[in-house]
Image (cartoon, rainbow, N blue to C red; front, side, top):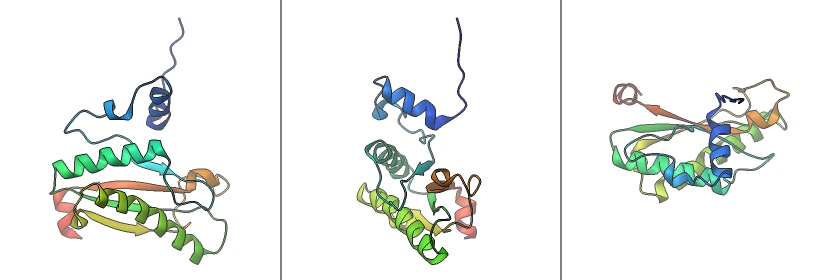
Length: 146
């Protein structure tokens, strides 16, 4: 018997969903969802259905812990001008913030950062990996220092 071990939470989540495991079952109550990166298509800032379900899980977690803060980092690939990339990365971060707020997360729990193409996750040629939003949970001490 061959066993394949995946050390990629996003691939694991997609495989689980493909096998009929629903995202609602993925995170036990009181536990933060593991997935913190959300990727976008070229020149897009809309979430797909799977991403939306995970963001809603983050909203549930943040509602349970109103003292927590999350910083939403928007990123873009290096196509286009840097001004446009900053704008697109802001749209991506704002999309996730709007979902969290619509799901009942307090605006005071959310911070936005938009980096354009200045902080690539992968090589500059790996455009798809760089078109993303990352969630960063801040501890109480970190949030007060900001």
